[in-house]
Length: 442
Image (spheres, one colour):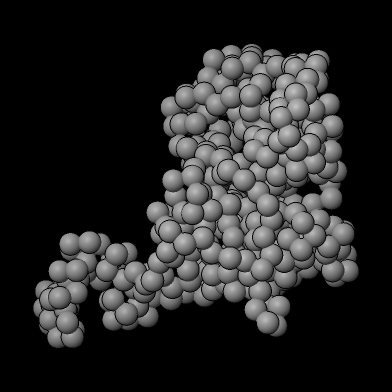
């Protein structure tokens, strides 16, 4: 039986508070500036550009603005640096709006397919359906979502399909799409209860997808089937490549085999096996395309493989919990930056496994590693991080993460297969264990 808090307990709690050394001073500090500022450690000097022993030549950062497309921005950033160097275009930017357009269409199709798979399910009894209905269509994503979209639709330069109000600030369009998709789900369930067959359900889905295409085209613009790519390279030479399709542009100006990248995660919980593949079917947004897969590895291997890829001259996509121990203005990512344990007088620290188990840990963001500083023993001390929050934060948009932050909050890296160890390569061939839609790695 649940117990209520007694007034004797309240009296004791008040006494414990008053007896705490420095309680009144600390209370004033927290009340005036908040727990973060009251407990914050040393910040990076924004005026001083940090040096790294390994550092890629990149350029201006991008800005996702008020959208959740970090996974897409960070992945396109790795590609644009490569393509820009290859063709002498320093700050080539690829169209995030183009990929986002098709991402919204594909997510809508996946959601409706999942409803059709069990059209009589009830969200009050079916946890999977309840989870899907919480957000039928958002702008977040996983590493494998971008390759799946690119393999099917290609990409275009940002100059061909620029940002719109809706691609940069997705709150309103998210609400419209979620309303439409929930209404479509209701229509499908009512049709199923009325005894409609599979063909009828598919027809309802197709009508709704046509309407959703119209919504997204209004919001993002209608993507081009072909386009002309005109640019001046860094030597001021003019180039014009006419009549390209998006897939032709990708093949010519990037040319990566997207299948060569493996997404590695470090989840130390007892419920996850090391050197085992996992899948996330609920977010395989391109139906029939590249599925989402992870290989779980010990945490120390994330850093070592990221270093190998940087040494090979290639940036590294990584998923992380950027909301932890970060000062956005200076671009400081330092483990223990906010010392709540000292401020409040009791242990507030959780290990990575416990953070995942208690839902404290989340993969909230994706960024790009473009440099690392190694000590005399070849071990990383700090990382250069390209963010997608614009040039006014951090050092011209670049952040500095110390190794303590990386160990605590960097949970995923995408690494080329030719850089993986034999043990991890073998793990990529294991049968993926499917994760539930509510798993912490979603």
